[in-house]
Length: 423
Ligand SMILES: Nc1nc2c(ncn2[C@@H]2O[C@H](COP(=O)(O)OP(=O)(O)OP(=O)(O)O)[C@@H](O)[C@H]2O)c(=O)[nH]1
Ligand SMILES: [Mg+2]
Image (cartoon, rainbow, N blue to C red; front, side, top):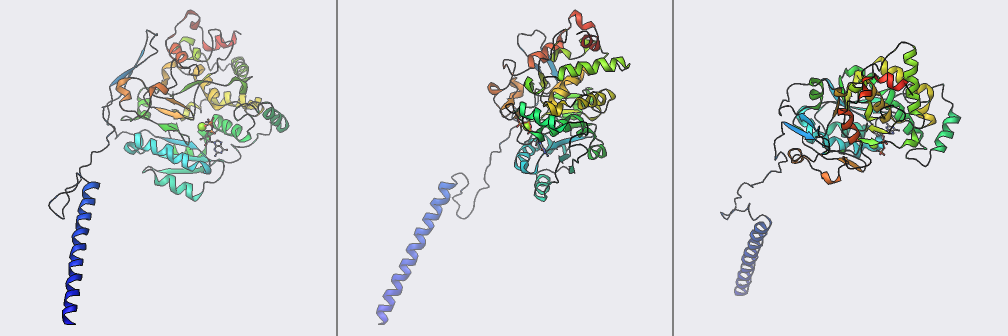
């Protein structure tokens, strides 16, 4: 019996040793194959893992770049500020009108903005909504940034039918345009009217006292590393308005906008308000119309990306312009968009040098994107210039923009008003 017990103990011990050896071999092999570089044969120790950081700043920010179109002998050279000035700040921030159910899209846009630019600058975010933001929206959007976040309600004084609007006519207008994008949408019309006439005087924005804002929408992309501050760039270069995509509007949504603008110029003139008395050659009016201003060519800057001075919209000229358009009711009877409303105004009102094209901020909204094709910029971007809406694209108005920036024809010696009043 004693002999038998001894033999079994010996067998069990041998089995344990066998399993231990096999187990050790499997463990060592597993670590080796899963981590061939990190494993160190001096048993039990691991070399610190060598991680090659994914470093997108593989090229330094260039000091300048040149914008085509290549057939245009007067290409535009843009000087960029030196990188790394992250101490000086402008009173500015991001503003987003957004719905609770667009939270994920908003986080996605914020993530890009924070990664490409704002983690170095920490400009605050202001979120606006015609309904109260949910706790989840507030928690998640404030978690994703180190910057301050503000949340404010847009009340019915800025988001409802003004008393002069005939709502039966407005409903008929929606029916007529139902085949066009958002043609039958009531909320889209409130949104466009708000973005045209109200966000810049929202009480929260006024309280923040920002000089400049950058409009950001959910589900947009920012593709390029930014080592300078676009707000500071605009301030130091006396820029009032900036865009990155210029586009041809669907004319069906704004059939009477151009005649309304002309009527506004006529009326203001008759009252002695010469808002557009700048020589036409100094303005960007050729971006939006022909030399004689007969028709609107439908070119506009996409406002889903917009960096501008808040007080541009506080000028008497813009307030009178907006009030006039609002009285006519085209935001509801037709479907006037904030993009053509803003673009027409800045093209007629500003000096063309006060308008800036941010070619170096790669950007995507819906299915369209802008990606710089200059080699020194592209090395800092995550986009494909072959997909960019560019000079060759019939939907783009970059050619009109560049031509308007350079054109100095004879007739442009007239003032903007002179031209608008002559037809
Ligand atoms: N709070 C709120 N925000 C809205 C409403 N409608 C639109 N927005 C916001 O207003 C901005 C513009 O609306 P979009 O629906 O993106 O309009 P769009 O850019 O012309 O159209 P898309 O090509 O579909 O993006 C976005 O930031 C939206 O989140 C609304 O009813 N309530
Ligand atoms: Mg959008």
